[in-house]
Length: 200
Image (cartoon, rainbow, N blue to C red; front, side, top):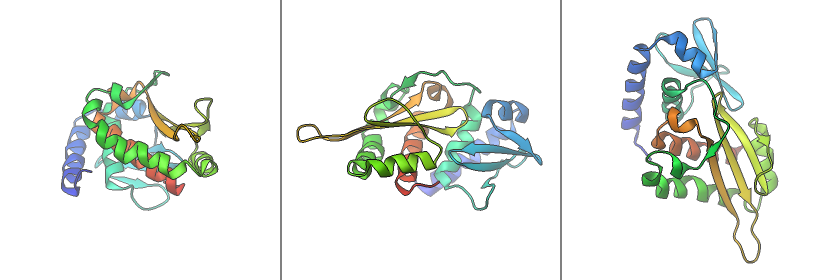
């Protein structure tokens, strides 16, 4: 995991970059809406409010997102092209994904399997509570709109006496243009933690 100082530096850099951009283009490409000079952006089943002048982030219902989620959100605003490609890629297929795969596997895929291999009902319940849409992939699979133009698929295959339970996380292929591999790794780790507790 990245330490807080690097998170703070990343937020500062992203904020500077956003201030130099056309805020209207950012709004359109984000999939959010403007209310009271702030961008309201859906993140799973909650709404974030992003100031269009200072680019601060808070939840519309109070509090602030975790610092790593803030970084991913700001980078999403910088990178989103405002559309999905409706095709899937694995983390390894993202540029630089192979370099982070070992950490990604340890922090996202293995915890996903451990959390839900004996609790598929919990996986289904929590995914649906976060706005997930059940799809036909694996034994239990949900598409989750983390952001309006960033969809993640989480799938679990049930094991048996011969084959262990396994899981995978896929990204709409537009994600490779929207976020860097490091951001997608943090996003996947966060998503698994959110799924485990059933709320954002």
